[in-house]
Length: 234
Length: 112
Image 1 (cartoon, chains in turn purple, yellow):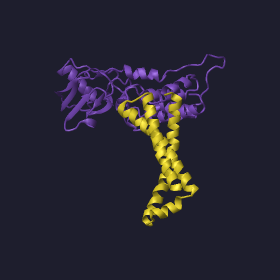
Image 2 (cartoon, chains in turn red, brown):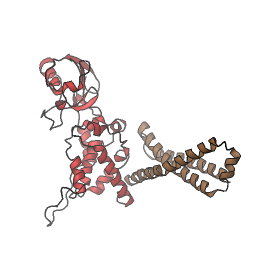
Image 3 (cartoon, chains in turn red, purple):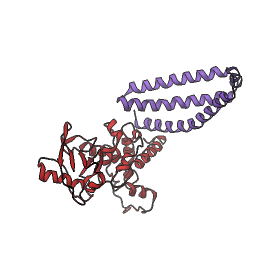
Image 4 (cartoon, rainbow over the protein chains, first blue to last red):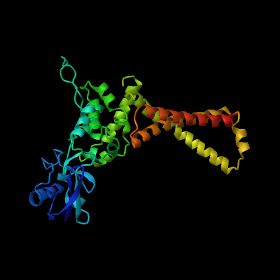
């Protein structure tokens, strides 16, 4: 097959390599073959190879995917593949993108746990089947691969938009009974660069390899910020 | 713009959308009925003039349109042209005032 791979950084071009087809071959195998046997200067990122770390996400035929969990048979068209770095990220080199903006936005969305002052009450008792815990369960498995962020049109239109992953994380904390940072968190996620900018196009939910639904989390934040605004707590 | 005002705008847009759904339906059915029945302008005015129910209905309709359009227009301008800040709020506000003024003027004209 013929594999076109992005070379360069934000400016660059596609370079085509002939790669042998093998049984059970993943797109990550293809990239590794190119780097090991055809051009050792190719830069790409991976770690676990089994869909746990989220570091090998790339754009394959224009769609953001985990390359380690994508078989070539799923995506090969006319014996050709096009592999590019994730959209909406600055490119460091070839297939490696700069994830800083993505994780900075998690911080901006206050996507970190803010515990209460320790008390003598002991552990927080949270029933596993409580509605809030179920909301957390539905969103907690994000591993920060950036596929949702790369798939979101709103991110491409509004550069400071927080993006699906950051708000999905904020939603897990808004539903965490132990967390005390809600007031500031809801302020951080409201507005033109936050949950109110989401167009509910569902690309993030369609492409999330973990089958999470960040759109639902963002909609939850819209409702929560609305209630907070009406109560004068925003 | 503060997060609180943005959240209130979001609520306003949803509430006005809920108002607009029946308003648009009633408006469409009414004017299709008027056209199909061959009512003249004079006959239509005879029904609307001095009728507080129609005046109140269209005044509500115009208000909902102006508010809904204000928030939608603001979003589109901000997103397409990366326009932020007070100038955007003033422009969107003036557009809404113009829309409401023309709409209420029309409502008043067919009422009196």
